[in-house]
Image (cartoon, rainbow, N blue to C red; front, top):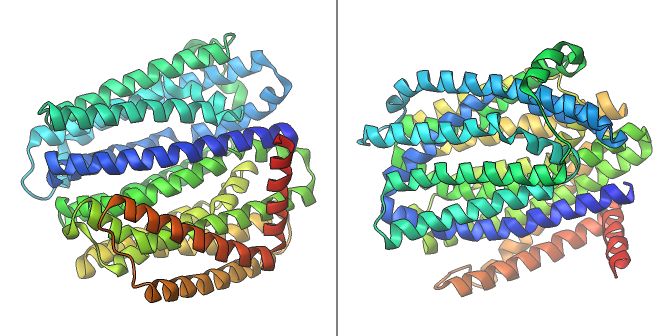
Length: 513
């Protein structure tokens, strides 16, 4: 990578890492307050309605991906006129999508009570749905300008604004219901208020960064036919986006309908931990998406493959360490934080951790596929959705929650770990994917050894039991340090890509000194 790309990549990664830990603590503490005061049914209803509205995001149709890629070249040339034209096109397309989402959402709202199993107030159901519909639609009418920041490798700006607003929102929600007797409807009202605040703050920041930016809906509508190349891959991106939304948003709906809305709350406690970790790693790798796009445009094949190998080694290291820590710490933490009755079985936890691991280690592959604009494997996306739905629905009938999480683990594992690397190596790198699978087996063998050694050491130590938050933090720090040293050390010994990554890290640190 060039020095400028490396600088932005490091800044994006540091910002994501900092806010990850802050948001993890804020979310976990506030969730305990929400569960204690609002109850399992209210929080389960909120999660189900949020995921239901999330399904409407399939109307976005991959516009974000297509136009963000189109911005790379004019940003590199500093062509402000072209950037304004493309953002105007963004403005036009997103407003059309926003209207579609509002209209379809109004129709879907009549069926939302059918998604909730059990005695839940219809007022709560409709208030939840329309609140999340409002907050989602804001992004299509106003917040589209943030993608210029992302394309300019300034993801850290969006990350800071997003997290500042979300932290303030959660604190206000927790304080209002704990100390001032506010209820669920006020909790929802704060969701809408802070969504508006995010829009205002983001608008002002974009104005400071790009005072010359003046997108126009009418201009975007007028010039839409001049940018046919942007739409060439959009049909393929559409299918991937729709499939991904269905894949990620259907689990809680299946659990709510086939099991119970209370079980949604039990599941979300664990899913929240996993999703926060995946979001962290995803933001770190998406933060280098623009950098990878510029790297690919240089056309240096050997350098591109070297960077991919380094990213893959880092992803397996992060995924392995985090997965081992979550496996050993999740249930003790849930028991301590929320109560023993919220603890799920080990087989359910294993499937959740497996899905989380896959979501982390596949990030380099997905980033490079996006960088090359390779989306033609539409069949794979829908195969993943079909597998997930079939296994989850049948599994929910026979095995309950275990069947649902098993469907996600199996479907994502088969497509993300088997097909996607083959597709990338064959279509982009144009070399055999055998080298990737051999590295994968090597990384997994090292991870298995680390897992067995960790379990043996913990067994000698008498396991993990937490009587207080300080004790839990001590256990977590020791476990994280142990697995990092063992797994990282073994990867350093057996992986040249890991050694290259470590050397690069030391070079960056030495420059700063």
